[in-house]
Amino acid sequence: MRDGEHFETDDILNLAHLARLDLSATDAVAYQSQLEQIVGFFDQLRDLTLSANPVALANVVETAALRPDSVAKSAAIDEILANAPVREGDCFSVPRIIDAT
Image (cartoon, rainbow, N blue to C red; front, side):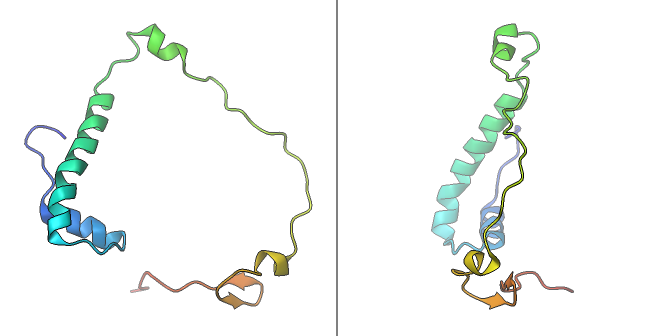
């Protein structure tokens, strides 16, 4: 992280809540330093100047490997939904997790 920036325990607990994780305050303290290290590594990567190093750019793939685009028959709806825990007609039914307020 940048100098002077740190995650607080409340930040970690809030992230855990958003990710629907049950995290204790003790675990949050342990993850706090680990998360700061991870973000610090990304800061180091962001600060690299790759344009001055042609060897670093030599391994960059210019084009993505694409498969040919072809028409294929898809599976039947009943086969696709056979293992669905809850089904509504021809759709998966999932619980609402975000309030519409």
